[in-house]
Image 1 (cartoon, helix red, strand yellow):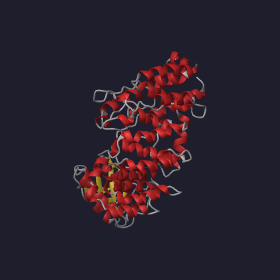
Image 2 (spheres, rainbow, N blue to C red):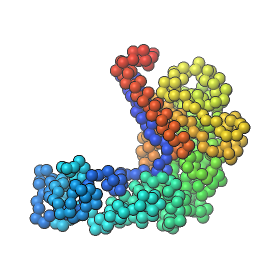
Image 3 (tube, rainbow, N blue to C red):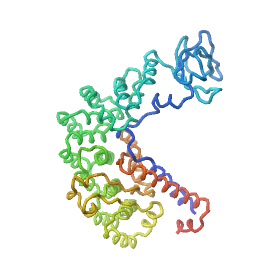
Image 4 (tube, rainbow, N blue to C red):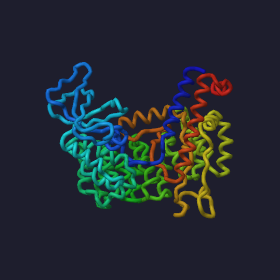
Length: 479
């Protein structure tokens, strides 16, 4: 096998790893934790103590070791005691009487990590350890530190919100300070990641009175940081009526920058999975607009399949046939959509498309097990309905158990990740430019199981191919 094809295959496997990341939303939809929270970190340690420097103690200039005295044991009372001397490594300025938070692992010879703490920081840590195992109670505490003057406290409070399920943020509604959130959102110096959190919270506690401010931000010549969360917040408060602006400004506008369009897609995805404000039947036409932009169409095909929108069979078939060298990456997502579709015309389309590009059909079959669409309740299958015909009962969540995004779409993945990296740090992107985002709570265990099996199969296949352990398979790749 040539080095080029080996590289492509390896890239495909890496993309598959990204796809296998959990799709179930277990955290704030537009937030990204900077690091483990103090609470998370302390829960995994064998020992956690507060120690202070010993007067007159000299730091070893070569190893950085210095003796400290334990003044408070927070975790691990059986393996460390107050008054005990420990020897962590620290290259900073210790200072006389300075206090540190030490976390240790691997007793009995504990290996320590440490960071200096102020008196307020120490009090904060003690309060964190005493918090109940309840998301709302924890967030009620951490909200008071979101913009604390001490960076460590502010960062930890933000990370706690970032790892908390959206449902818990909704439950915090009555305890949110609306005016403070608006002030933070309007602060031009506010980092994009924090603005995303505050916009998510405003979507929970805000009202239509906030729409003029949001509309002005969205309509400006220069978009704001955290655009995905801003659009989602606007749609939460405006409802279906807000789609007109989003469609005109970002989704239907072929001149809109890639990053802005992608942010709008992320916002629509959120509302199709967790928002519970706008029905999918109203959101789908917005995603259909992206199909008119062939270079971006692969970003939404997986959503159409996961939401069981089978109204686009003809359109996607034409997209496959008309694909050029610049956007032929769209073909595998189209094939996966058609394979998941239960309509007979989808099977007929696949037969015709195999004559056009059998390689795309083959790649789809190799890297993706056949998605299985679950029937919706009611006398008719949802697959026979257009979005505008769906009833409220049929708006219940329906997921295909596999992603419909190709592992072969490396060029667009790189393009997407590079653009997103320069756009205020949008969410991580999987193959085909599809972000690892919220999925419906329906059939979560089934989805995780299928993804695990699919990933294992792909990794075994790749290993056998790269090591020439499967000559027949490798020969197929070479052909």
